[in-house]
Image (tube, rainbow, N blue to C red; front, side, top):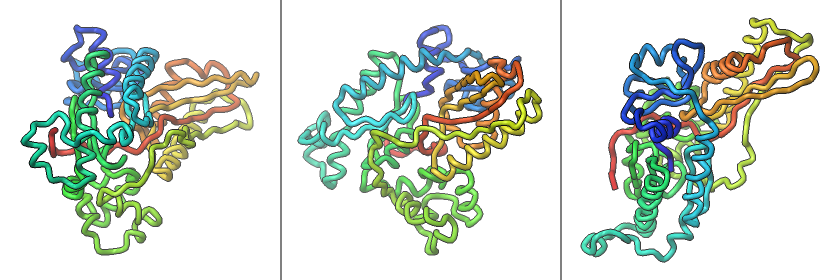
Length: 370
């Protein structure tokens, strides 16, 4: 389950005059700042999370900039996760606005074509695995109905046999969509998608594959050579992912909650050049760790300590996952500037990320609407 343009949708719900308008959650373009989220109306102009607000203002001159209200978004997230947990399914929240659900036990014994016409049920000849997937359709529809009825927001739901495919399905027919990827169709579904769509394929791995002429997942499926020469130990799993195979369980207690990097200076400093260089190096370190663990982050945090050992931290959460050092660095600089934290020399400065999950794939073409 993935909420649709979550931050911006909450703003449009709470302020009816914003409905249907290009809403940009973040600092106004006249100030030094970044975009936290954008409504679908703003995204049509190319506005994206992590983009400088000034750039967003140029791309979308009629965009309506709204300051983030993180406490409101967090409270809304709790209400939505409670709806999901109330189904009885096993739940793995992966960020403030999305979660995996394992409904196997909840759906055990339910007719695979519940809610479908008698004719459809009579003609249903899918495999047992696909019967189980179809049995999840009424639950998925009920989740979307309840979120809309109780929270006045829309969500997109993906149904599949594993986390890899469910994530792709939930990114598919946004907004307010419902996509089912069957076992029978999964290989064909994956073939035209770019390699970056696969879990674990970040910017660096993508470039390696592109340089080798592997542009789509279909190219990976057909590749006759040894992928280890390109991606090392990731080769076996990458090949499995290309065919829609994924045995990762729900992580109800994910041990890797955050990634960070920090520096304690030999001498307390407020020199902007030194601090920027430190932040840039730390952002690059964090980005490398994200790449190594095949993860992306939705929250960026800065930590600082003054000469008297007073320690502060500030954070910002965005909708679209971050993987690149320049994005992490941009948000870290924004937090320092917004909060006016460098008011005196610093003893320590650090950058961290959390709300970790697989990098999102690119926009998917239309497949199956259910």
